[in-house]
Image (cartoon, rainbow, N blue to C red; front, side):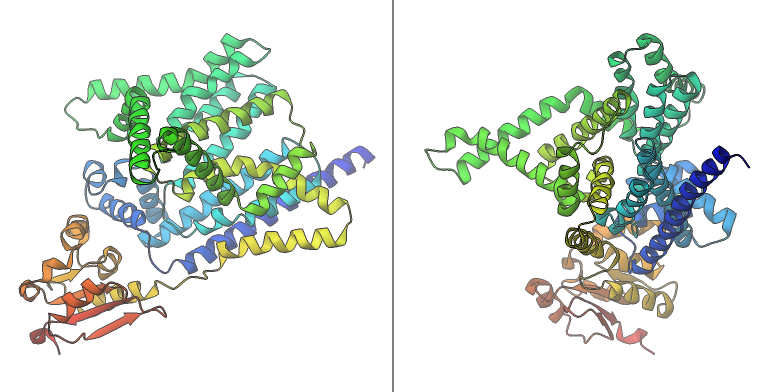
Length: 507
């Protein structure tokens, strides 16, 4: 065999080993996330109920049982996996999430490969994403974001390839990847609309590239419009698009008004007469600091330091195509998340993972540089810091919520199907398997323990009350029942679900 072919075979085999190893470890982490999922997250209950509804009712009905189900593709996929595998709805969701996370991991490694052929960097790319704290911490959640992150990262790699070598198939593949991401989260539309404008900053045929990148989106929009015109009698829920359009038309006005209102509140409630005149400046700086710290914590402090080291030492040299793609995606992520923080004074960690996955690209280059310096002490310290940061994503150090699931499962096993059950805990209600799709209406009705006052509790056969030992008001309300709990499920902190059985229902 010629020497060149032997070398090529070694390179391919080595790269394939990285992908296979990362894939197996990603699946192992997905399985670990499944084991750590002591209870289904709140949004996940909506998706599971919607998927279950698809087996007995129409898509229209499945989309209207809860708010998150209005964007139905994820629930449809869960139901599809159930049909193909005969798994339960819950296990089907975990399998789907594991596959989507696998795509994210492999796409990240491939994205780094587009920037370097260094095998050590690719190994560290696999390690970086497999040890990413926030990404691992949400593996147990049943959320649409898993699909969005997967095809979002695929689209980043495809757009870099497109600008390096423009072609119509390349443009269609990029659009297709982002359309798939959009089916999971409507924010994908913003990337689809804004990223083609990067074509005007290239040295090639700008108009041609711009049109190619928009072609599939235009066709998809035209087909959707045609469907709506031909099925005018069909009620289609476009509330997510309506929210997006509202933000486009009124978002800036809302942000300005919110900023002014919060600045005024800050001046009146906290600042004194000398500093109140600078309330807007102070509030603006506070928001910038808040956002910056949130991004750093999301990526992790140790990864942020490594990324800054990579940037400072110019260890990652981006060509023109990669530079403009990264800049475009990063700016759009900030455009989406920063205004959300201003408007709602809240920013969930998972909202920043899409941005963190891009910033993570700088990390493996820094890790490889530390490794290649052969400085044993620095290498050991770096490795320990990375592992310490990663532990919280794969090991639960907090208090277990398993008692919630155990309480719900006890009701499922012991309460007859026709029993009237009250619970102020949404997850207990889900595991009790007694509410079906009415769980979403009942959850709001049962949220306040006032529903049990004045002997109203006697209309229920079973009470499953989530008790916080630090909430004296709820404890006082339960004392007024003058009824001892039949069963208590609790964790080490004292959080508990007290189950009461109506005396005439006890065995």
